[in-house]
Length: 452
Ligand code: ADP
Image 1 (tube, rainbow, N blue to C red):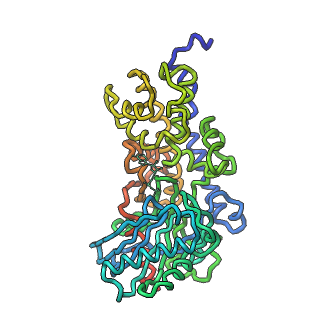
Image 2 (image 1 turned 60 degrees about the horizontal axis):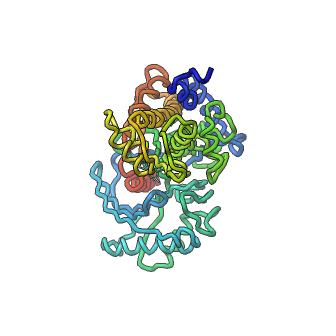
């Protein structure tokens, strides 16, 4: 009977849903592969959850890229303007971060793009670039339907932006108009990319085997180089060589049709119900930095209410507050390697958990390890699907984002699981990509000028 179960067996019953078999991840791969094909096919693209958007980036850098480029980075944590000088493998980057005030994030599109043009104006004046006409690469990390390398219609705002009159519009056109309103900026917008594509381009510059880019930050997304023949949605005449294009998978939406329900837990469902986009971004919600901490919190809350964790907790303890358990706490807690639990205790203090024992710390850490491992394994299953599709001897995957950078075990967990899931004989490497949004955007502009 339940009474006879030990405390640990009882805890196990509340967390076992996070422990998935190898077969479960293989099932994920089969489903993802099918969904990717649906997204690429003309007949099924509109109903597919994974959009598999062609980016119009047709070639990776080969190291011969040269010249001076401006780059913009909007949609990450900061807005930056960068000057990137490319000279073979020597790259010099100067950048400046500008603030986007809340009133502009929630204002009109005109105000936003005027503000961006102002920042570019200040930047080129400070760097004495006014007389130059510079090509610009724009990292714009919001979901867009691209119609050309420098033509991208915003599908929807995310991450706290809500500027009126921009959804459905070509953001390059809006920036171009704003720049025209200023007389001193001679800038040609050459390419728009998202952060995943920038990450891939940046790493591919130094590594010819790199054909996959992955973001593990606020969100989770991947892109890869695909043969044009496999892209049924590529209805364009320009099918010249190279016969390939980077596909922006937008795979965060995988599972929105319910196909991942077999592996979702009650905590995943609760998180979804209270999110701003219920039913959407199912895969992303099991992986990315915006949600992982909250899943941990929901489990800890449950264990506490069941009397299995923390002997006494106040009702107003932050542990019971939605959104108060940050994903960076998971990294901190898992970095504890001895019985002192220094970081774990710091986190519990910050959450105003009044009294806790070493055993409580152990349980908290255990919950974190289960949930971060599931996230890493699911991301790994996604990458293994891509590695198997591309079927190349050696594959490098460029990765960026704070979750990958700072979580102490994410890299190792992913490598472990990918090895288990890829076809025998295929070798792979995960590498941290530096400055994808600056260097990557400039390189995309440089490559497209080379191909013109
Ligand atoms: P973005 O994806 O917005 O460009 P980041 O790559 O910095 O920016 O990702 C931000 C996300 O990373 C946030 O959701 C945050 O919770 C998470 N994060 C920040 N620091 C850490 C950390 N030390 N460990 C794990 N996740 C983190």
